[in-house]
Length: 250
Image 1 (cartoon, rainbow, N blue to C red):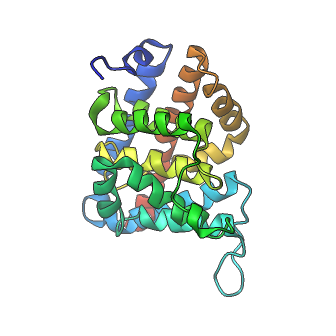
Image 2 (image 1 turned 60 degrees about the vertical axis):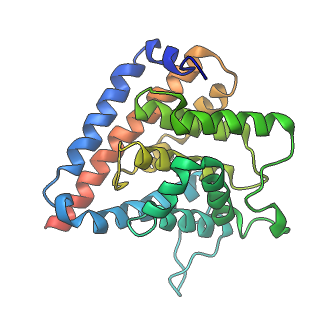
Image 3 (image 1 turned 180 degrees about the vertical axis):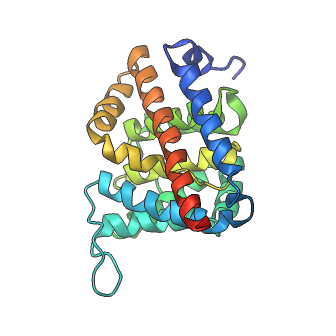
């Protein structure tokens, strides 16, 4: 790609400012005194909250059973994805994502949908329609350097595109939100994944679903509104991260 296909998005109303606010908020929470040394603990708590919220967005039950397990395959999958993106797992999966995004997405799908499909052969395999392969290839090019837009914008586009495309038979929402977190880590926007934007997407689930659907129409205004929503969630997710660090610091 010779020209940056995402560059025009920065000229949409409020996009540039929203992206900058999200970046500043996440940068600040990484400088929190507790996160300078204890970020591994706060990252695990953030991933736990992210997984539960992501599951709830999909209608999964987040009520723990007596054996401290979830009795819901959607939630089980979302928690597996969250664990793969916590302090212990992000380095490995993030490295794969930076060089081979399709492999990382396949891994996310295997984790998210393991309890949702009858045929294990479909795990990690996108549906076979030609347009899906083409759009995933383009998305991979953007992730691996085909765009220089601010990281919050790229994360929002990857998130929205995966929701719109629904490349897998099951688990696309959990995969899309996991991919957004991977963009945040791989670009250095949120390297330890301390933020929890999923909490805001759940709280604003009506806006989330409506704007995600409109993103898929390709309308410029709708795409801009989706990006702003995602950036606002990242900024609010940084506030959530600060509350986690404050509690850990005592």
